[in-house]
View 1: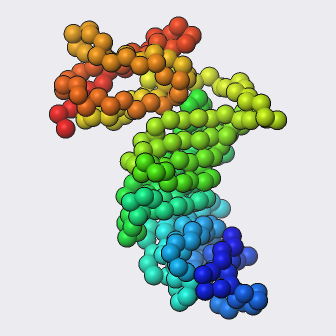
View 2 (view 1 turned 180 degrees about the vertical axis):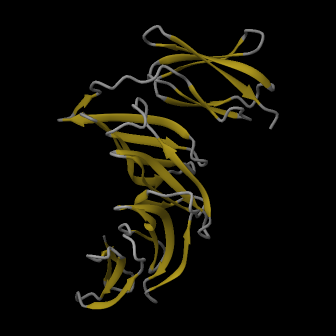
View 3 (view 1 turned 90 degrees about the vertical axis):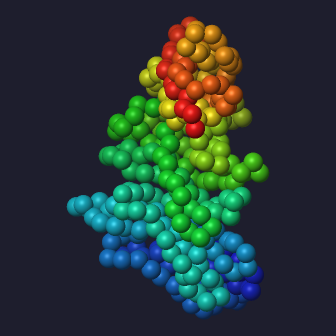
Length: 299
């Protein structure tokens, strides 16, 4: 990437050939090289994503190699606060060693002053899922989540899903875009999240020559996914198809909430319901009826 400086000149970010160590080079307004900052270890790194902040400070999101298995490098997400005046890192933080094989593609600042980075996680041969890493304003890891669009064939060859760009929304949530690919099926993917990283809606379509093309999807598993379960106030549901009528049924068999939906992922505010067991029943557009038992806890 290339990034202008308030003090004049610009930064260029990338990786050096042969050792693939990331670098940030500083040039003046005449294109003369002024300084270079580089980092890395004896294993391959991943290209840094550079996000301008206030003044000549930048947030650097990148993946660093933690170990190698044969010719494969296991990478983990990292975050760096960088001062382009000093041409030095102010602080660098990384997630635990349990997070590996992550590739960062984009990052942004959140409404609460923290940061998020998005990308993909390699989980098998020709198989990846999308992920988002959330950091606090001080660079402390807050949460890391993986996301899979439905329908999906799961952890199979050529089932690939990734996020390429992410942005904060005025409601303190996030919106992220990427792709879903399975064999010959390839779709653009947009996912809206709340401030906790829970999906609000999921849209995965493609536009060809100004025409919306839903195309032929691989078959999805006919099941309702519910989380968290047990839940306290908010219950998230994911369906195998878009159009459905959802009913929340209490232990007496009474319908306490009914809603028609047209998205794969839905968020239900059930804070007014008493604690206990409930049945989620979804009547799909094809006539199929699916059900799921959920528990509302006492908080």
